[in-house]
Length: 223
Image (tube, rainbow, N blue to C red; front, side, top):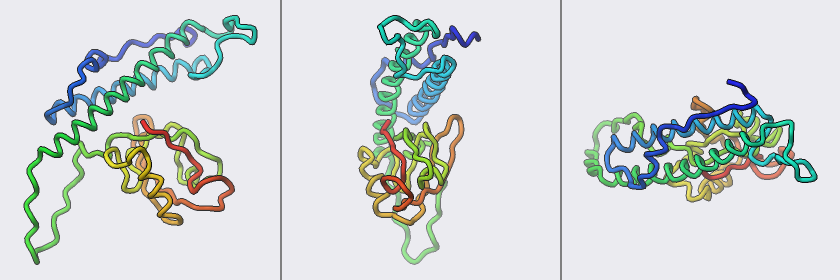
């Protein structure tokens, strides 16, 4: 592919996003999760297109006097940016449908029978693949050098699936994350992130006196 005039095909999930109904079965929920993965793959590819031109979503495409720059493919970059904006909106709507589907499916499950008294320890079941922490709910968009977040190994672009006890269904607009950080100064918190095609687990220890602001030295934006 010529990186100076790259093209990216639309992901096959775009048509499905026209349907705003919430999933009502496990199979429909799994299909939405598959659509989310495909959409995120296309977003990564489009991001690579911008990288090939050494621009991002905010790089000026005109000269200081208002003429289109002649050192980059302005038309291709504008087309790519427009597609990214469209897919980001689709991604946000898709996450909302998945979250509502999870709530509906969990509420429809029959209640668990009470554990018998004075019996052996209850069996710990493996985490379901549909559990809420498997859905990213925030993205790391700032990591300060030398901060507790940087020391732990968090990186720009990491998508947070779990931050201590916080996950997609209970983070309350990241308010709970802030509370957990404030209540656990000097204590290690397990953080699970999606990094490209990998899932990475790190331990972050909130701390003062590292040379910058806050207890972590990083910023999260909600997805």
